Image (cartoon, rainbow, N blue to C red):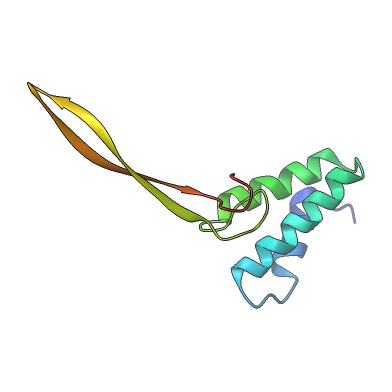
Length: 97
């Protein structure tokens, strides 16, 4: 049997018992970094990266740490006055990603 990269991803994701989705993402980031460090299969590393980016909802896809919310007030000109709109974005306090 010839394994595709999707088969390997399935085995890594669903073939293992993880305590949480975060543990799974941490493991996949570790495998991805290991592959990148050894110049291993670029396609497999990219497949893992795609999975991590799509499934790491509140986890940094670069380092695996929990994301935080950054908020700020952004000025919006409105006629002769300026209104302020509250803006927010997710960011990683560990790596900045």
